[in-house]
Length: 177
Image (cartoon, one colour):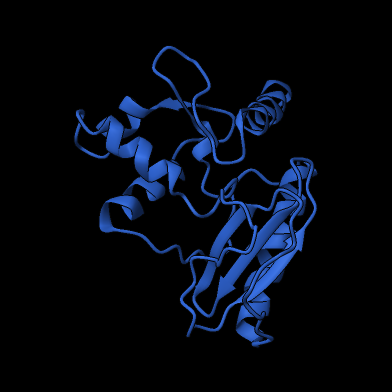
């Protein structure tokens, strides 16, 4: 969701976090985990330039290992729902919007308006779009499953090509299931 050209992760500077780069079919991903769970899964755009040290705390390593394994299973077509504990940081509205993303079934899409209605406010589609744009946990919290009301592929932190790839990848598994 964010590039990594000398920018800090969303984790606070005083908090212990673990960092890991993993390769995937949609490019290199940066995983950031804290004691309470995974904080970020971000598209790294090939840059390994970060200015935060990685912790070797066993709880943090457990979260990193768990999400890396689940991402591997997802891309190997063996996992459709992630179970690793997540710990994103955001406003109350953002947290609600991100939680609603996880309710969109694998291989399906929703419009921003449908997501807003699911959150109880049909007029909040722009706010939903803003929250989705700030989603720190790409792929796992599937903001790629939200599209325009007319079916168009709209903005995505990893780029429209990656969004299309993820949607096609999931749809191909639903068709054969």
